[in-house]
Image 1: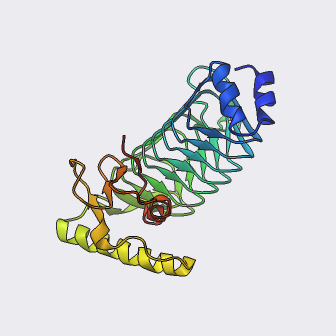
Image 2: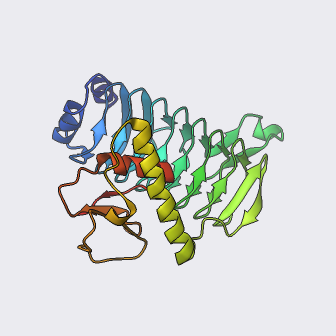
Image 3: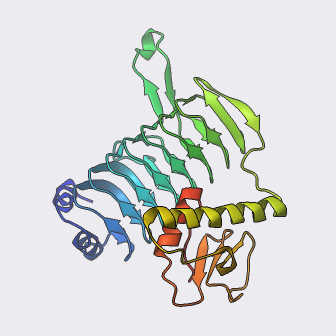
Length: 284
């Protein structure tokens, strides 16, 4: 993409922005949302279904690949030279919250269902002091695997891999690899608990489903709305299932999809589920 074209698109609102990008040959899904005042300058661009890029974002690097259902919040900065390997790849249902700064000069790969909390900094190079006078220099890609949660104000240093299902404590500085399903915190971050985020037994699963539905009733009450779903109306499942079990709405946690079996309008309930980290899209 030429820089002049990127500047022009900066002033064009959604949905015209998406339409014109598609006419210009960019790989932008039909349901993507690219808002006005979002600057996107990439040599190779691909934006997935239902992905949102908010206003006042600055995205500049060589390859920018955003999967389906990704959300880039306002005031996110991605800045790297337009050169081979300066890639930012983000998987499905991942979100980058406000005030983040990502520098993908050596490449940043973010998996599915990853939360990058606000004020997070991710760098693939670290240099200031003169290397030829003994100064430290570091370069290397950053990889964040599926299901990782970085709360606000996390600093990720170059050449780091954060394993699947990890949780990093707020205000932490990650300087080395973190093994999967670990809780790490501190500056520098150290593993303080292992085997986190690895699933639960059936009894605990049922209990948590019940808690979610009771919380939904309270949520509707706070909004001044009638409760439109009870525990008997919803089927949660964390395995592959065949649709059509007779419930109003079915949530397949394994495929991150939901299906409505009646004329029920699901917008409120689906939005509510995100309060519990449950992110799903319509079954297709």
